[in-house]
Length: 306
Length: 306
Image 1 (spheres, rainbow over the protein chains, first blue to last red):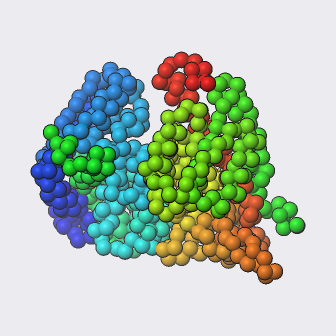
Image 2 (image 1 turned 90 degrees about the vertical axis):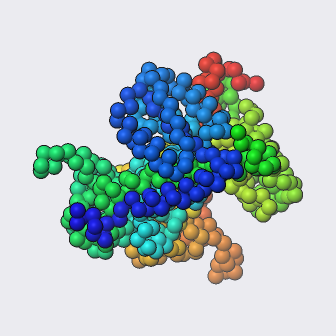
Image 3 (image 1 turned 180 degrees about the vertical axis):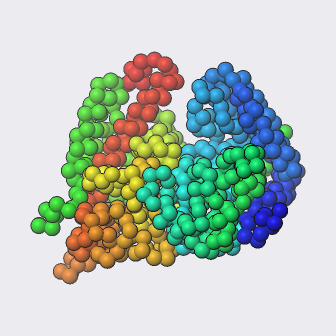
């Protein structure tokens, strides 16, 4: 397909491969030192919607040499029981990171679960303390989609200091973390959303435009500054002219790519990179845990080895 | 002095009085129910620079009916000993909130101390988890100066949804929290700083302009949109034409007040309000602690009473 061969396309796949190769080296060293990294995935109730994601995580973890264990809980489990299970994983030194697959049944408050994961095992970067740490310029463990989006911007080689960035979408785990990550890198960041008077006015002055709102083709060519970098984080399902279901982003890619210098395709832009970031976060978490062991016990790393 | 009688001035004093009166009512009720609120102030080493602040906090706490205890530690205390003292206060049910007076001696890492305060006792709103909670739209406990600045904007009666806000200064405890607080209220927020290409270009389109950079008179009249609200958070000491030392903000108040519709004077704008916010945060912390007691023990509030 000629479209994705266009050099303007910022594809996630090659970056993901590079990150996974690097994680694989680090994971092998850690394992040899007695700290094999391991993820635990928690699913609750009907998992049909998440099975494809979990399978993908498991496959990529295997590529990186990271253990992956699935724990499946019944749909009628109480929030308290689930919290207790998470506390057990928090206390288990063989577990490096905990992933809570969404959605969970409606009677389980997802934010309570995310907050129950110990910040040192929060590989998804969603605990309030993880978000706060980004604000405090500790940027190495961030929510996966936000970090993947920023990683693709860095691929352009654009100087981040002073870069005019506009983020459309102010969600807690995508839009806002992208904003703090880039503020910390020296960019000048504006966050727009559904209450913004004129998104177009802001979008048109952006050197880098991030879009994460879930509205197909919201961003048209006339809303993009010539030469800009456009990172499309939307994932929308729609019926194409051929009657088939397809995935499209929040950006009208065909027209915008004639104006932008770089644009992420959907799918195969940000998407493939998020799991690689999850694995990289796992190594960050492992290193933080090992630093805590050293600080606490002041002995050789072998202590916590099995 | 006619200047501060100008109706364009947003003064912190009257708002502070209103907040303290409200805190006083809540504190009296909590005390009657067996939960008298109490602050502990920690100073380390030479306290000359902070004595005036601590005295003011003590006086305002007394006005609000909140206990205030000072703990002074020697300059040569280790970070570990100080952390241990903080953990003791975390565990003491009679202590509602812990204030770490800055500066501390250079050998003590201030961020480690702030992170040692339990988030439920973090009345200064500086723990990473407190910052993260703001990002997650839990806005009732924020860093005092940031919250005071937003409180003064609210005094104007301007509709925050869709308001174009520009924050000049991206510090972790002032600029960034102002940005998240206002994003959560529906404003469109841009954060500028010393790497921003043109602060003036952004400042000129702001309906509300917050300035917290520590540069006397950085913001001139030609950088302000007519009718804007200007919140000046700078506190700079300089020698006036009369040879006397005086405090000025980051805004050239005399010229900007001819353009802006509202402006905070320095001093007596944001400053007087910060301690009132600290006391309000104390009541928020107390209520969260009581909610935890109820959730944990499932018994009447009297349990934790002395």
